[in-house]
Amino acid sequence: MLKEVLKEIKDAKVYSKQQISKNLGVSENVLEDMIRTLVRMGYLDEDLGSPTCETKCSGCSVSSCNTIPLKMLSLTKKGEDKINS
Image (cartoon, rainbow, N blue to C red; front, top):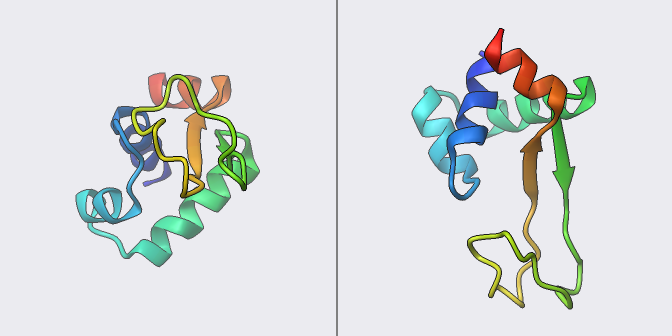
């Protein structure tokens, strides 16, 4: 199931716990636990962004959001390798 979470995050244009949990048929709480596990294992990087949103994320599809800090998740090399194995 952790590999499926990695695939969902990789394929998502915008990370949405609600959508990913729906796609996988698990609760958002279970998904959060799996994401924490993947971060701890080194398969995902978690970026909490700027807490004040003073800078914009140039590659982000919601880069004009200068009021709400976003949690961004990205696959590490180890995560990419896991998906491809």
